[in-house]
Image 1 (cartoon, rainbow, N blue to C red):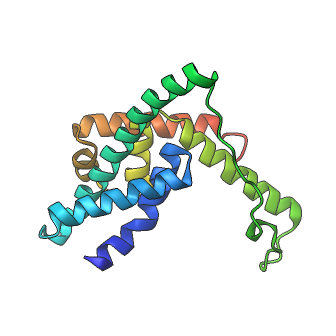
Image 2: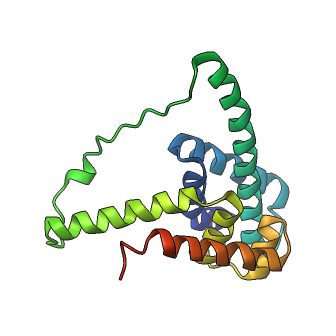
Image 3: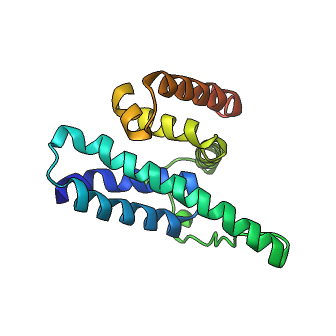
Length: 175
């Protein structure tokens, strides 16, 4: 079980971070999903684990969005608007590239990565889920449908729309 959780932990975290935009909330979601998975599905065969685990992650993400909607209503009422404070002082990001890329190339790569992350974060939740499960996790259409709790046709539609939207939003970053 530990080996399985280690193989999905990083990707689940990235998925949750895309969906929440907050590293701490993403970590909470993944930890909660892991605990729920171990409690309920530890005895499942290996081939069923990935779709089940990502179904739990997707449910936790949807729950987080629901809670945020309620919190944001109250926060907006109390203080007028909700704002995130981000700390961009990452010392690792300031290190010299050991591969010897030029600053222009490095900036281009970083801008493209930032644009990709931003574009994925702006996708509607279901499209985001379908795209990440199909493209990043490489789950089949059937496994993705089980993880998302919808029909295979819906997965195909959401994934197709996500890819089309990402191509449109990122056309300036890739030839």
